[in-house]
Length: 501
Image (cartoon, rainbow, N blue to C red; front, side, top):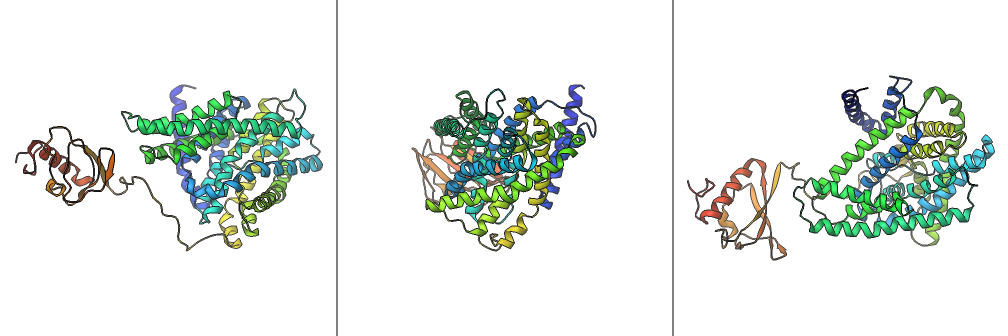
């Protein structure tokens, strides 16, 4: 197939996926299900596009997950999740371990699977999905602490689950014991955290002091830094997923230039990654081969949702209460148990043993696919109802203010930065003498490194930097007036760039 045909097909799929997001939003379903449906439609059971390479799917999937995690970190407000971090970390470590053991015991006992396969299935299903959690929970009126726990957990728990799945998928070696798991995971997580702890603050420091020639370069630089963290951590045999998430979290909460543009760019890139990832996974799946794996998948999924997830939440709630770090009541525990959504992460992780040649790994992939589809359909739309029944929803209560650093596009306004050069007749002019239109105002002055809000009688000086807010309709008039005063002084005529009538 020619490149132009692929580009056309890809663009049509992306546009259709974007349109389907509206349907998903209204129905309460994570959009991943519709994206997977597009993959099914394009695959061998639909239009017949062949794709059956788990190695390519694994590599592309891990890269897309890194980008999705970077967006999650960049758009997460630290003050929102700070108090939830102890509980989220417990769920991402102890909770993952409990879930793996419970699912593995059930799969081995009920389905007769060997221990390696049972443990791999438990590990693959242990991670909640950041994209699925964010898409559903950010529309729910939940208390800040509760939503923060789920958001932070979905960001943190990818790293340990990837480590466990990779270790279990090494077919030439025996299944590692508990001590080896703990030592290996601790080392990788420590390296990933160290990389983020060094690169995140260093990157924020550099971006604040390097004046790039175009504002569009800042979002690219921020995302590039998160991938430097990912690649650097992996090369050092550390956790790339933890490094990319923590680096993005640090950068996203630092005082960076063009933060709004950076967040918007990251969200757009993450949406594109999600669409491509889910469509690819839908192409990889073989619907005709799935019927034999439906029953085992439903059994494993039922154990996960009704037994493994609740037990992991209960164990973690007990731990953080014992350590006096948090106190989660039974209603919150019940909601956390039901809100552990699975999405692309388990499906991508299921490609790791398949690509490594683990026996029966293709059936394991199909079972995970069935679990994600069925239980996302079950859990996603019912979360608002469950929240109301358990009394954890906060309808009618005061919500956090939605504060944007520069929402001027929505207000149809522009922010102008004006520097008073040496020799300019703006020097000595008082702010009120600028005679700007009523729809414009000098809102801030930066002078010798000090920032202050001017009054009408504040005199401008050479080398001052002014921030002028103006409506879009009178921006040109404001610029003409400032140029006129700069060249002809306070008595310059209103019109004319050179201060003449």
